[in-house]
Image (cartoon, rainbow, N blue to C red; front, side):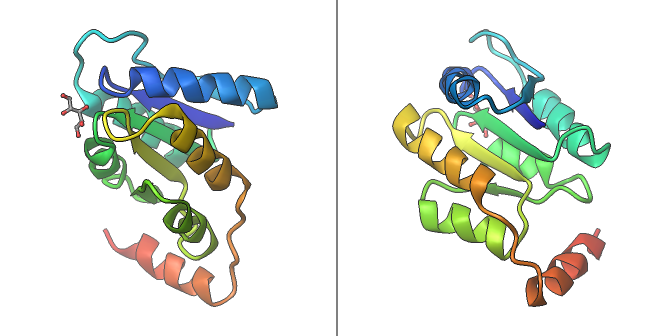
Length: 143
Ligand code: RB5
């Protein structure tokens, strides 16, 4: 299951990504927000991060204006490895080498076309393990 969350700055992009997930039959839970009324992004970043920590979700997608506030919030939670990226190469390697489990995107940075490509790459790229597993373990121990 993929946990979704956004603030008002990311709501529209989240809706576009939800449409893609629906079309592909990919399961998700939407933790809000549910419209463009101004809200505080840490509230929704926390909900998605907690879903990852509690193992209710394998991955998370967070959307705000820049993607940055959500990334900062999510990374406060041990076990969450959130990246904010707007290129395919970074997203691909964040999965292969860093075992990233949360992707944060900026609704004021990109349109749905790029966002969906990034999400698709994030969801379908596997962690390589091997020498990277030790490094991720080391990273996860830093609190
Ligand atoms: C809200 O205006 C904006 O600050 C928020 O969406 C996000 O970009 C924060 O990082």
